[in-house]
Length: 118
Length: 251
Image (tube, rainbow over all chains, first blue to last red; front, side, top):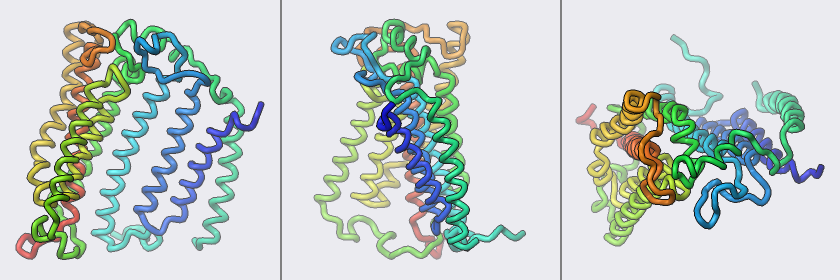
């Protein structure tokens, strides 16, 4: 069992933890949001690498690549598409919240944002 | 919490999390060898049964069409949320004077405006192309919609704010976004009455490899394309609106 067989999973974990590190050390809410998208891209890599097949093509069949020929897993591809759409909407919502926070508190540094007082 | 103790705290928990993940990977199939029964079944029957060459589209809009409806409404509700939180409010931060000027007074050359407008048309056509070939080649309503919506950013960047706001009329795109979202459910209800099950694909599926094929999948794809494209334009217009300074007279 060679180490390289786990390399895609290692890339996914690296992205996950470096994104978490960015969230934990952020001095700017926009940087926090971008770190979160890095965390999310680790899930794309994980999903797609689970569905990968050696020596297989895309799950798109045509006369040149007839149905039944080896293909990677289409389910994880569809799930990744869902993941990307949800990621984009989450980013849009979080950016909106950042705009509102800046408007109300005058800063987007999480360390200056103490809990709200009534 | 000081940055130093924060780092120690983070590294401690990251080490625990990494250990759990490494343990979990032991149970995963080796890279490149996983073969699920569900996907094997879909790969062997999808094209024959539905005349769809792109199996990922078949999974999204046919076999898991109900899930995709939920996904579409995640997008819809989040665009609605952004609209609720930001519409009617202009950016309060002091902006550079340049922001309030039109393309002409900013001295943007005609060449830039022409190229940007041309690029917008090209990108919009490309978005429609990607969405229209959903069943035959890689592509689909989600991807095509995102490309189509991005075309409007060219108008803002190359021609200016005023031109962008005239092109991307929010009321129109908002209405079309709701129309696309509603069509998905109406298609489901219509098939429930006509075919006996929600989103059951019993339409004529056409010739495999043709642009219009897949039966109900193609209609759902069109509804999703309209919703995502218009939703992206609404998001762009709301965010770009935020860069505008409040005029004294408007307060």
